[in-house]
Length: 398
Image (cartoon, rainbow, N blue to C red; front, side, top):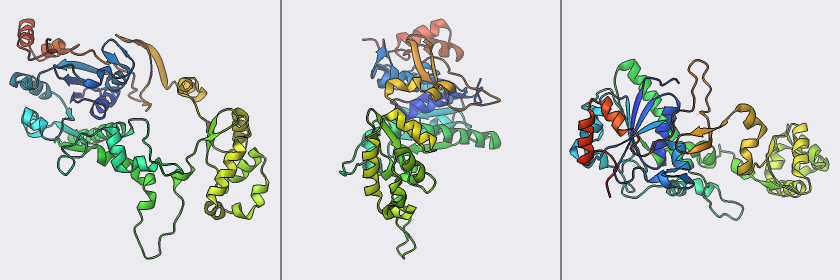
């Protein structure tokens, strides 16, 4: 059942940040209804590998939900949404600032039908300011937040993380914030409005380590300069693969030298202490890179582990599911999904002793549950048919 059994979430979102927040709550046991628009629904549905009208990425960030299609451009469609929200706990929307209010589903309008509602607005840049009229995507916020600059290599060339990390950290922040708001409501009976922007979530996520050299602002000599953690985040080529390690601390450097067969580094004055190794980090890094390239990857990994040096060979994407620890943990589940057939996906990562979670329902087809949800709202088959005929619900006819 999961810890959120009995809670209902209505989600009117597209792309990833809002939808994945809904699925994270569904993974925890919440009943989640996704409201989609008549003109094709969520435009992420067809991105990448797909079966029919369901793409792999869309399925991954929309599992566990039911899909209903309401035309929110029409007053009767808005009335249906309000009727659904009236008996729900959470509403999530990621329309551009001002759109929800124009549609009649802004926070005041929905709070009028459900005073205890937790209303969540997810945006790119916030609700005011110089950027609110600009389109916001993951790569845009990576560029603005400093994340792309942090990925720069020795040549100084910025790079994007090739993963929608900002969307996903925003989704996780939204889910965390919703849980806190539900706890407040359980204690006080009061709902509230949560406003969350991708740029704010990105900066909060990046700051502790990524901006560690831009945090301490005293200019009176109290701040001692030190190397950036990111400088050690390197992938090095072995004789036959790729490996990553960081081992310059006093406890790990001797093990690194033993595994590489370079005991002379221990008596080299450039590397005698941690401070010396930090001062000569570039020279030491080049020596480590050259030495690693001489060794077969698996042999070197085993030697490093034998000397308690943290390291890992780089798993290629097609190898990740075969990693021994991943298999031992049962992190990835292979099973059949309705419409899609056999799939491999990650289970919810947190293991609850009292309220265990499971992989919930399949990611829905567009309009799959509209009639079912309308029936729950009290509409009989004839009324549902009339709503479809009038174009209030269901995909737009072409």
